[in-house]
Picture 1 (tube, helix red, strand yellow):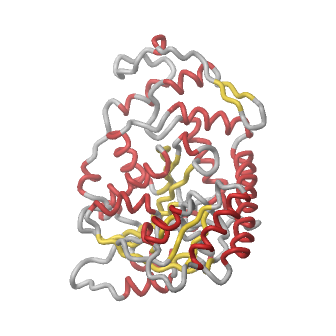
Picture 2 (tube, rainbow, N blue to C red):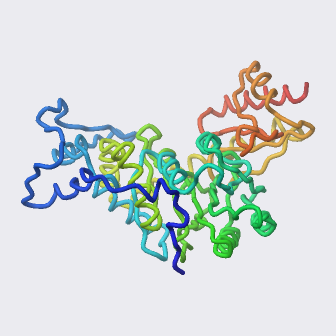
Picture 3 (cartoon, rainbow, N blue to C red):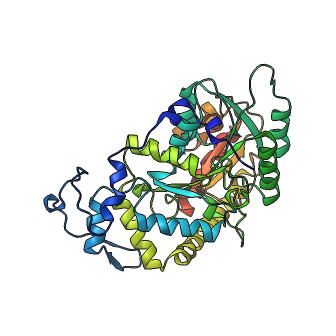
Length: 410
């Protein structure tokens, strides 16, 4: 199937042209090239001469002189070439996409998402997304003047039948159907829900039927608690209709602010041009640290082994939280046990909206959670609460849930 990507892109995205200066950066690495074109600062003026960092194991990793120079200088918009190559190999190893893909390193997956939204959506457009969904994405989307259409979830994520119903009943005589579906398919934030492989296949088939592009925002993909990870949308993308967003924030360090987008070249290139115009490239220093870690781990297989230890860490914390929730909250709230991620999505029966309960009463009791309304596409009331088990100790979880139970009993 041939997709006309231009029909999905905004006029602004289509009008972006490659930076003539950015185009020179890869050429400067060619043997024998003498550059009088790029206005790169001379590294002899940089105060830093070497870089090293210490691991949790106590080992110290150093950047080579060349890696240090690369880390302190401008680099390709798509990322340090060696890191980009490692991430391409990771996608091929883990997802085995059935089509050729392009990849661009970005300042966290949030950066890539914002560029994708800007490239694919304009004021007045209709966007399909889960309800509830990530408040960080809503903070970007809500001011854009879009029509946001929430697709209901259950414990297994977005409900395919509801997606099909919305599209089938769409008033096409009044306005075109949406062309984009934004989804967090694994360990959803805030719901904690994960799509099964069967649901993903059904959703992909619906996307084929109605011509949807899928924005697969998957920062919790490697935090799956089952022995085998559920395959991604990218792994089944025979048409080239998936843009996949990955992040190091939950796996390496949130503060290095690195992510990457993978998908069809015509779409990734538009994100690259947006990145060129706004920040040139993601931090080369952060990229050099990640690349050095890949080298230390022995490449992709070592990185994948590292993700298993991280997933096991959060699985134990989930088990602890759910055991303590059973102890304090059974009969007071309802929740599903998540198969991935960091969140428990709790329904408070008999309550129309948890806003004042969480923002006022819980704060007074010195318990911080988030009310469900913060994650609703159009600010609808919600009787849900999001709790995270990623940071508190077992003792703090126990005390926080005890305090929350006391509030609910009042």
